[in-house]
Length: 499
Image (cartoon, rainbow, N blue to C red; front, side, top):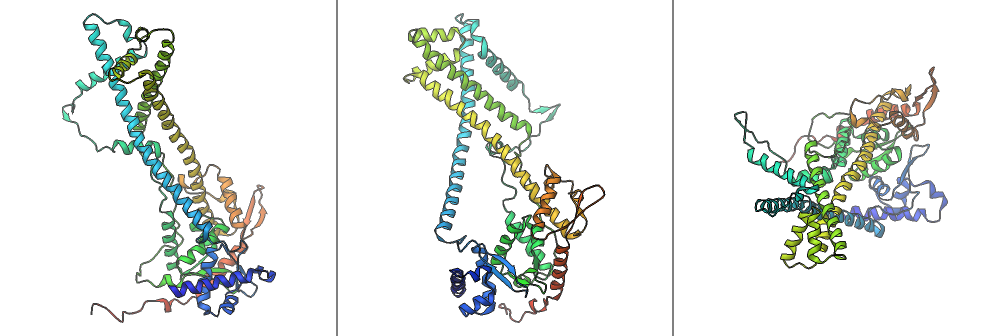
């Protein structure tokens, strides 16, 4: 490992030296050029150059003789090392930590606010009902106490009491079977934050699919084939496949006619003799807003609405009481509040006063007014924003899946392809809003490297023939058929440690 690292550093140093002040070297360097500068074995240079191309965002070129040139148009700024890379990683990890910590704290706040405040408000409403009923029973109450918003709360609470008392565990003579329910806190978090990203392990799935393809195809893959798996345009796919080469000991090679292929001999050294599917790219799944039932999400909305109503009530009454203090004495202001039908506020005020809280109206305004209102705002806005962002993300996922389908169709057909011929599977994952625009994007992405020939058919629509890509496919198949994998077989076991 140490020797490999030292060899790699020598290769990078030689590439940097070639790029300094020598215009002739702008076209790039071959493996032989670097071999001559470093005196390293040619096979070592060929193995490590793709790693350098990955780290420093290099590009590949093919000369007329079929030799591969490594070109570094962006200089030698490492993606993995140095202060810039460190700062990028540090910033990414810091943002990730802040997001997770904020999400955890907000989850705790949600449980306290949504359920805790809901229970507190209902308890205050129940207490007010009990005190009002007691006052009426001894002849001291007035009918005005049941007016307005409080009267509605009183009616709802009485109905709730009635339903709880009359509720039975039997349904038409049969015991009611209780279904396993999702924990309340998880259901609430699902509504606010959504579900886990269904494509969180996508890179791993992609690499597994490509490895399986390589093992079924003599360890050789082309850029168009990789694009079918990744759904990336040619520039993105070239960077990705160089990263893949760096991870899995691959190396680019040129065919006789100058077509670049990527070869992974070491991935063929396997004991598993099972068969693998060939072009079988996976698909990315769409994000779900929530796994909750609609009725459960509506229940959370209603609970938050109740908190919003109570919060508005307490804040408005607190402001009203503060204004009354400028015109009435303290007790007169409370009596005026009661006369206006705001018994719940008055009783809450008296309880806090009995508990020796100074300025109860300010405490009520903040704790039972402002805080629930702020929470209710976030409880609405976060799912709303998430819904908007998820729709955008899902459109990107649909386009990526459609591009995989489109690239595969072009690679399979090559001739006489029109926008109308892109008919994706009847599956939401493959269907962007504008199918025609998506098909045009597919042709442009692959046509940026493999220019198609364009004809106009009788209906006036453009028809594309990818003759250049067809020649590359023919060269690839010829190269693949010439690969001798007999030397890459494991052979018989010559030593067994158990013997």
